Image 1 (tube, rainbow, N blue to C red):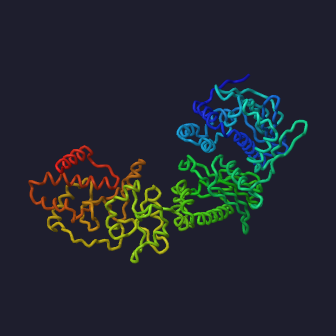
Image 2: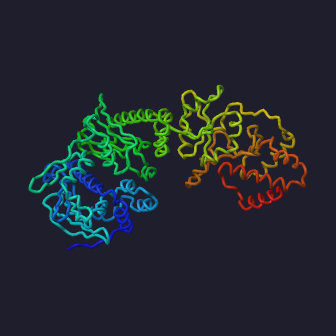
Length: 612
């Protein structure tokens, strides 16, 4: 007896998007279903290492493609791990782990749904581009009962008990009228060779009375000689393992020899995945031992800051029956990791010579990549050298640390930086005024990770890495304009210190300001204002909040005027109002919220009105 079930709301929306938006890319469904069949064989092959009985009825692994021109159907079969009823509900009926809702939301505003569908792991649903009905008959390895899943892709799906002689899955498609090409064996052969030639299992085409034909080369692409692999084959293998539809930005294929031997085929995508910064994001490398798939969840195979790297690593030196727990502790994995990271960084160094090309990588993955300065002690300087930063340099181009050093002043011994929420705001930060006046370049750092790597990279080459508040250069500017009277300045700073005691630790005179009346700073060695704000925004405790310092410019006409007014008690209310506005302006320049927005708006409007 069959059980009628409804699709999740998001799945119904997804099917509508797939059917209507991917129609021009109909052939991708075959690649997706063949890839799924290959994965099913991989899983059973690995499971059979420790449970040999589960695959005893399977025979040699293969993927069978059976077209039927008379019935207008196409069947894709495998003898892999198969599914039971729960698997069908969890992985076909709901796509519970595939981020469907996110996919649907992104697809609404994204012109290239083809790229999105792969990112969210919903390739099975591409079958409905060509099929008016889909039927799955499947039996899980180690179990006796088979099940049938069927749907027209509109209302819902039905699951019922079925019969299948052995484990594996048959997916039968009743083709739409405009998809009849997919019963043509000549066309099928072309599509399979173009998009699935890299699959490591025979893809067999059923030719009816003419017998069967193995269409693909059925050899692991990463074990073949680079000279024998075309660019298109590399791209299709990338799409197979990444489930993406873009082209890779970088392809790196090499064989390591020495104390440990392994083959590696690695890719850096062109586009960042939607979950790049999700805490539970899994690594993207597949580990094989002698072409036997072991796991795609091996922690430590690739450092977290390179989590966007896709690909395969295959070693003959690891034991075939190694457990995942043993893998985490295996010293050979550490050597593989060291070798692959080293090769990747060297390849990035080559690509970085073309700024425009490298900028594509940086825009997609730069924020994650910079985490390596903080995390990867052994490669810290190499990662730092490959990182790009905005700066106060006149050029619109991002800069490297080496380029920054090449422009440094002869007496300069440090790389200076400032952190904040965005580059335009930082460019106008009053604390930069003296640096601009002296022609000293400053890095403008706006990513959360910048607050941390700058603390773990005290020096780069011979240069210290310092926040501008720690500058030990002579930043005093030669001034010929009028300066406030020292005595009056003392009265003003004392007055402001008392007035702002709840918000500011102290008020000081600064010789580093040129245009602004005041600026906010923190005491040396304390948490930056930006970092404190980040922690506050993430509900982190700020028990060690920094002591704010309000620095005032003794040459600014507004400060001079206030210092002259401070001696007359009748002026105190106005001095207090203007002082509060000056503090609020300093806060705004730092990206901080003003203490009393109503007061700020009212008084600013009043003084503007007086001015005009």
